Image (cartoon, rainbow, N blue to C red):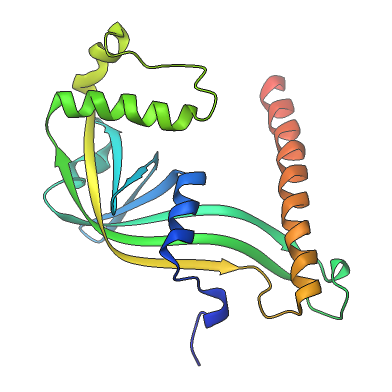
Length: 202
């Protein structure tokens, strides 16, 4: 038996790139002496590569160079799917979108490249309104260049996991789509209300 089922796999690279661009905060995983090191970083996709930056004091920084192997996970929307939302009899399940990548990572030593990359990433993340522009002469930016390392990952393996009720009839797939939208909007609001309430009471 093939796992995961083919109907839950999406090998369309454009779809995976869209996930990366829409949800750029990645989980970056390296292995050092059989111990995984994990950092969450925004990564920008450029021509088959992922560009990122890491604090020099992060223990994983020493592994993001020298053509080392790295695994990257991107997470799209997800939610529990209750059978109550379907028009037919079903069982409970969980729908989600994930992109799993593997690649080779190389450090970029140039401070000018680092500076321009930080400006470019900020411009991308500020789109479409661009309410903030990171200027090249920003003194805080210049002061921090010595504490940030830039790296690029050449992607070698792509795997899209799009579990979106594809095995259901078209009407139920549409119900699942609407539930994914509704649940994500509602759960974020409820979660933040709880988190900020707890934080403010400390």
